[in-house]
Length: 121
Image (tube, rainbow, N blue to C red; front, side, top):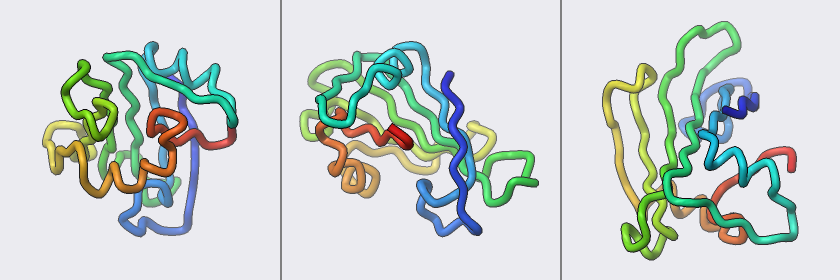
């Protein structure tokens, strides 16, 4: 897992503007560690990235978890087979599950990196 901390003064409902950590399984971490700004990237089936959202540094639990999972070829051609999920902070409830939609709309700006944002790269 690759933890990464980002912060903002308050949760605006947009997961990239809240305090939290990003975790990646070994399949995703291997690609992320090799990513270069001007070179295309492609993640393998089974890659998973989880973004934890917290409102403040003192909050001990996540408000929600935002997840990307690379599915098998043919799962969702428009999203390069990524599935996007929003889970409750404890991970027990799926709040939203989508391929195309709000999550993907934002991630289209990262098409060259297989739709994955990398902060600080």
